Length: 96
Image (cartoon, rainbow, N blue to C red):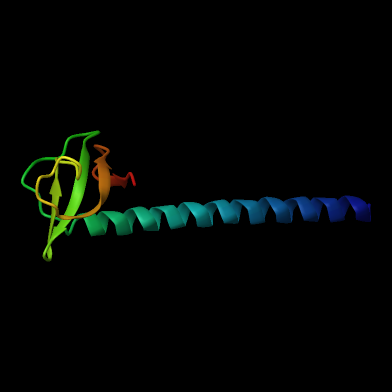
């Protein structure tokens, strides 16, 4: 009987610990998503992002802007800060 309880307690502890780790990972991913979108919100752009569209983030002497033009196609070299995709759900996903 005590072996059963020990196994039961061990299994329950493992289940709870595993689930808490999953929740912590999911929480961290949500915080990262929020922080990334707060970062992207600081960029100016003069177009309406479309679902699935890839956008490029640049800095030009303190002016941050989002562009449809990738760094390989820009004739002027701005500081490239990364790329994102608008998922159509109201937020951007980091793609690099």
